[in-house]
Image: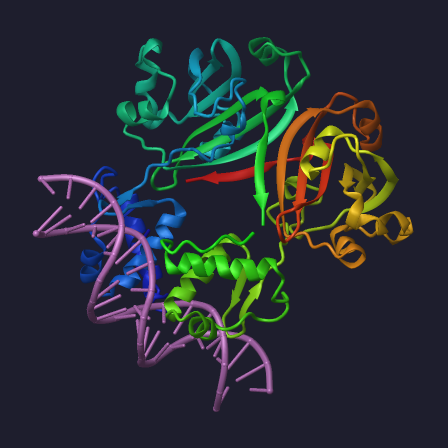
Length: 242
Length: 242
DNA sequence: GAGTGGTCTAGACCACGGT
DNA sequence: CCGTGGTCTAGACCACTCA
């Protein structure tokens, strides 16, 4: 997989690639600093400035984090750029809140086309399906359908539903050894169906924001696909153009 | 306006601010290179590395563009990160296309609350209103309501409607001397109203993507506020999370 | 105080664009 | 050919964290 480093590439690019590979191989735990800039410079026979430039790239990509005086660390994604962030949960008092979650369904089922394709499964193959409703202060916010490949995620089928907390990704890590390292999200809007409308307490046919997420592991292989729906009236997404 | 440079700030930050101010004062035309790194280094009595770091920041912000061998140039925003980009115009054959535009209305009117607030106008004050329908290959895509402060934009009221092309920003520049340098966009979705539904050829109450844009001049003062609506079925927005 | 990243310098040579 | 930005070096000193 790791292609031979192209000698025509600048040194700092090759160094970036070398470091990126060690990150994806999980050579360095996120809690302990990677080797210092001086050590990396000596190890790779380059000057410290070149190391800094390679690390600059990885920091810009969000793969590393620097802390002055402490060191440089492998970064875990915080999902603070997720589109979900733009559902404004009424009492928008500033700080982030995690909605509670109740499992509506959990089992094996034939994956729908979109899920199978995103996960790279043969069409018609069965996969783990989790359906849940997320609420904030009891008020329904999102309905989610989550699809996972059977292989590494089987333990989830045996876990007591009460042990599913508000967040699934820590569960993937502790129960299945899978770390979510990145994700792709797609936003669309559509008229809400009768069933989801009932769950969300909104009129049938009212506009809903639909967010699809494909979560990937450290090697960028697909881990989880989910589709979430929530009332469009509570959603505002903002960007700046320069 | 330009605060006294804080001596505690790193040199490259102060230099960035100095360059940013010259950009916003339009000292440098976008078509001619700004002074070379060596010249800026000499002028500000710093090393070339410090100049490079200051320019790095402005390039990352999208204010400058570098071309090896040619020089560094002031960048005009291309709006290629605009949310509008994610309306998929049927034959998505890759390259960008600019929808045609027909003016539905043009005149002075009392600005609605959202427009007045965004533009910093006293509520109830009258402003220039342009309403238009945008099509691609004859197929309606977007309805737009555009609001402009009377002051610099009066020439637009006297311009023959036939001279409004597909793009307004070049007109703002040639007719009113106003350059759009940045913008904020907000995305929501709502059920389409009867009138817009008719214009867009979609069923009343169907979900529509609503994009509001506040365009700003070089000094970041608000120039134009617009609200655009289009069928949600043709919209897909994608981001990556790391 | 030892070790980390953050800032800054003053050079060298390379790659590219235009003359 | 010259001038531009791109890469790379080998140092210096500062600011911060932690023992």
